[in-house]
Length: 127
Image (cartoon, rainbow, N blue to C red; front, side, top):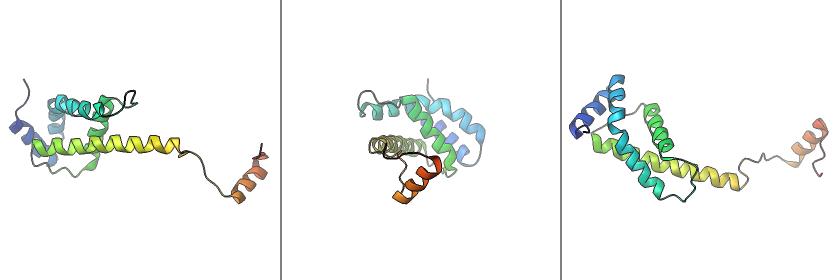
């Protein structure tokens, strides 16, 4: 049986106050609900999406841990922040993928830089 909302809220407050062991206790208690939340957002994505539900959960948790500004009010606040992070992760990923399609990984340079590179490395850019 899962933890009560009160127990989760207490662990969140303890974690906010710097108790790292509270995070270790909290993580398995909230994982199933985070999985359901991530699954809900992933269903909205197209078939064949590269990211998996577990990857979204882990990335959200990593961002939470790195943020260092966790002043959790309660369980609802925590899951609200997690939901927002998951949506942002999916948006960031979509932007990255679209950028790649538009040549986002292409190195841009001026004609002068290309000419110098061509001279330095003896490359025929027109070929």
